[in-house]
Image 1: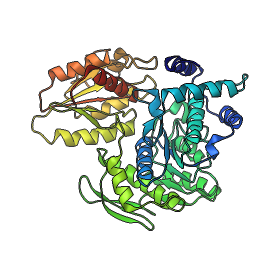
Image 2: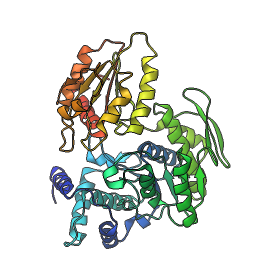
Image 3: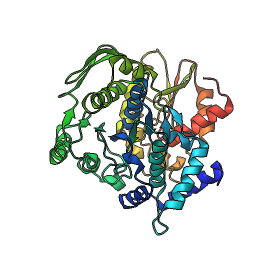
Image 4: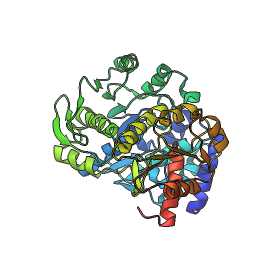
Length: 429
């Protein structure tokens, strides 16, 4: 059997096949493996932003409730194994090697599996072998033709809609919504996060088609903020006051409210949930790379925002931090993928940023620092160009005063690269 590094080399080599939207290949390999995804209950989570955090919250609450829980998310930050977790523990290197070997032996030699299809089959197989009670599965991209859309979930969550992956999902919010609505399935409760009325109607129409009960934030359930850090969940049956989540930002209250709506409407019957488990689960949840504080004095925050909606959420949080201290400056370190809206993303931060450092994650898809510079259309802001991401972070720290804020953002790949270097360097946090 191949070693773990050899196995990863094989897996990552599958990126050469790109992104292939369709369910034929994943359906075929899962059939050959005995359809492991049918051996446990599942929750299916889609959305432009917030689906990872919401998935982590669902898994945390279910685990505290005493259930054996699988969690499948993407991408990873540091180690591939982060994508597939049972009871909060990453899949082992030995399991990755053994299961990839099993999938390779079982696959149709005439069928080409993409990286994400292979990884999805690996996750579903691992969850079966680990005898999970329930798995929380995050959509990779879109929904209708995503490799995860082979499930028969007990509940569906669509967190919200924004522009991202337009080359694959469409160049309008309506087209993107249609793709994400593709995970709604027969008579399965669907929870819808906050979104404009005309977009909400797309999901409501799909839900009616499949006779799926529909639960909408602000209608069947709601969020009542009681302070900057606490909130009350109000649903059809549940009213739970004084809730707090371990994750920073008001948007995490929204994500938590969406997660609780799924638990109330789809899960609480087959998997009873107590208010105490909800409180503990929300306080225990960890989700790295999302408004994560990695250093103090100066405050260094990493956040995987990579689209306009994520940028606005991050701007709102940074705005509150900057106003906390007189004379506090913001140093922004940005690296992005070339296929993103570079100019639109950067423009969000211009009213707030004092020093802009442009960098480049070590990926073929990454925009070069020169490409990012061309996207800076603010004449009063002269960016510093440092292609090496670690050098960029060190430069930011060198020029910062103890009271300043440094934010590293633009891509989860950049955040993962920086977190990995922080770990290797013994950088104090």
